Every structure is written in C-alpha cells, then in structure tokens.
Image (cartoon, rainbow, N blue to C red; front, side):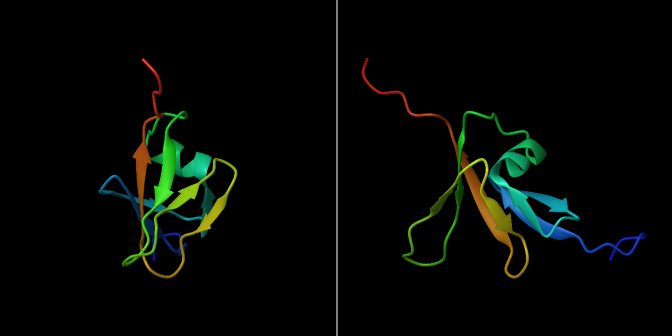
Length: 80
C-alpha cells in the first residue's frame, strides 16, 4: 500500500509496467497512462491458446486479480 493507503494495481502495456489506484480503467485511460496514440488498437493478452482480447476505448477492464498485459497495435493500412 502507498503512503495514503490506496492499493496500487499494476498492469503492463507493451512490456512496460504502470500502476493505477483505480481497480478498473477504460481502454482510453490505459492508452493515456501508457502514452499510446489514440488511434491504436489495444489488446489484452490472454493465457495459453485463448485469443487475445481487443479492448475498445469505452470498455472498462478490471485490474484486480492476475496482472494484466496489454499491447497496442497501430491502425491497419489497407490497399496501396
């Protein structure tokens, strides 16, 4: 616990550790904390063979329980 007795919830974005006093954060808040560009797509890494989960900007993700690992993907460019 921190000096002000608030629990810190750790999470990772692209391998870098971040902390929050909020138990849940939206996709937008996670990207803002990690300085990820707003246009990037955020994914939550799942365990084993489970497909990674896309996280929308408005979707809240609980940071309680196991440490969450996210990765950001730039917007796809199609055509050419």
